[in-house]
Image (cartoon, rainbow over all chains, first blue to last red; front, side):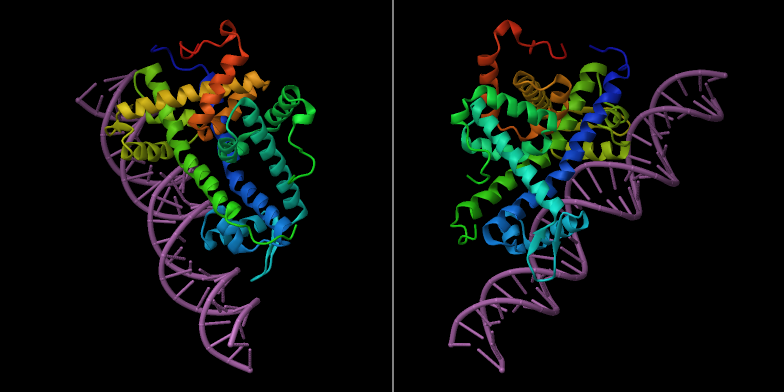
Length: 158
Length: 158
DNA sequence: TTGCAAATGAAGCCTTGGCAACACTTCTGT
DNA sequence: ACAGAAGTGTTGCCAAGGCTTCATTTGCAA
């Protein structure tokens, strides 16, 4: 060991990788809330702050704050004392996130991870799965699993 | 849609999964710093705040704060105006993190993710890979790749 | 040895994501 | 119709992880 200073390579490439991870992380919460709100709307026709908070495992002021941020980002809308709804942009994101989540879970299961663990780990991992990686996951799943054995991806909730 | 309230299942299981993801996230930064400090010690014999900051892509006060937290958690030690070093506990964590990182990258590559993308995505994903999933990854790699085709895991940087 | 640049530390500010406590609406049942 | 319960909103607090600015210490070179 004890070599010379890094020659650009590590010193300049590494930071980028952490910056990307941090950027992904800042989107993660947004994505989780958007997906959750989408689920609730699907189930109840609207997403109430209390339900959002309960499902996210946080208190209601925290949920309120998150929703405020979603509104600020143009992903959701709401009126005082009324439910929360997604904008077109928010709904699109929810769709994307949900699909990605399923793919990640499917991949983990295909690799041999127990379903329950796959669900838990996917929750954190999914936010860091880039489009390129997601495509690779999908390709792998198609390769690895005979079509009729695949979980149905098309019908959404199944 | 429009069914009744969730019957315990989602309402109580879901929060747990987000809580776990949040817990993992709170460890992520610590893990990154510990691994980075381990790398620097391996290369230069010590980890200077400036080098840590540069590699992490943050300013030096941010690195200082992170190191403070590491010290508080018993993972690192340092004296004013001197380099940062890892405790046994910190070194063990660094080792674990490094091994996990390699495994995740290897798995992504084995799945078909381009090496460069694998490196980037792994940075964020690795912190959410549980022991169970990690074991599954390792098993998959042994299954999927003939031993002589494996990247050498032993020599560290390679 | 002294002086200056580089490294480190310290303080203060911002944002995010948690929380509890309290205030105010809405809703519901009598 | 109205009182109490449930739901929401608001405020203020904390810690973490960023940043900038400024003070201090080190270390090297003249």
